Length: 175
Image 1 (cartoon, one colour):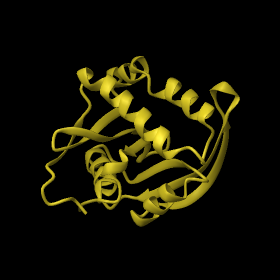
Image 2 (cartoon, rainbow, N blue to C red):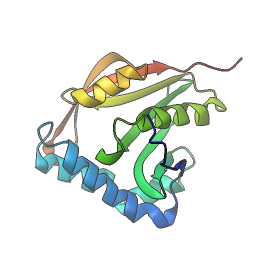
Image 3 (cartoon, helix red, strand yellow):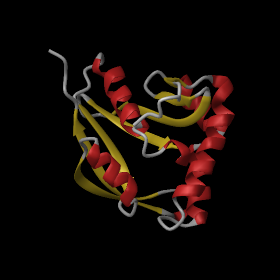
Image 4 (tube, rainbow, N blue to C red):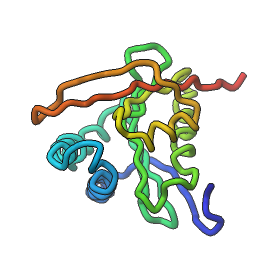
């Protein structure tokens, strides 16, 4: 759970923080993904999904949300999410924590934050894709109520493949 002396805040990513979010993504991916995917794929996906131009374009859209996790004022994680074409379903496209923030309950708080933010928009289900070899993340998502619903094999830029589980969580709605 949260460390007793850590001040935690989850809020929207600001334009002046985009470069810091991009750098954080690089730190997280380079620490976590070796052994799951190749370094070449890590660098390709970082360049495609986490460069400042792409993040800023997503921040300008009204159908994509980016939030950051701050611990004692330091950016320590982020999430981005959007509605899918399935009614009531929000896809958590990105949810990452710096290693110093992992296994402390912050991932679950980010998931709960997304569900709460989207409840006002009729969210009933959260979905996400996770690499089938990413056992740590799969275990964490299961712990927070996600179940494997399907698999997905998709070719991406650079000639790489994303070999994912599609996981789904039913969101409890307040009555």
